[in-house]
Length: 125
Image (cartoon, rainbow, N blue to C red; front, side, top):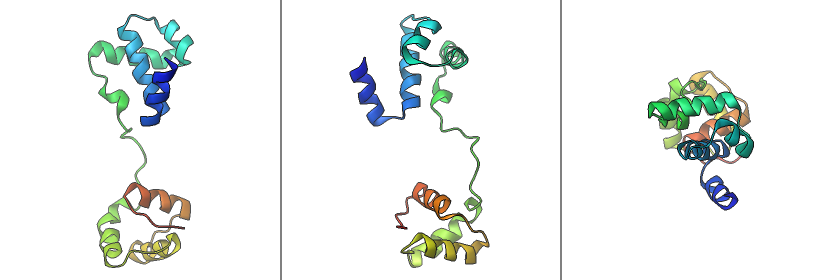
């Protein structure tokens, strides 16, 4: 089992691996207490997973969480993308200055780096 977990963790997040293994164990007839003991998951989480399995819809368990906070730059994404297509900024500081001029919004360099990385940009610090 450890070999399978290590393989899956190399390709998926640890949380998703635990959910997947818990669902497989449930389908094989393991009880929630047995799964809790083996994987260290909480009973409320296991009840939620079992309810999804019983409904036949486990897809929500693997969603990226649609209730996450949106970036304040999302509404300006097209303007930022057009500006960056003309001339790609070479540093995050330059990107932050240009975004400030375009939108009037300024992020920390850390948050800006995360925002740009999620959108496929490769700008160095």
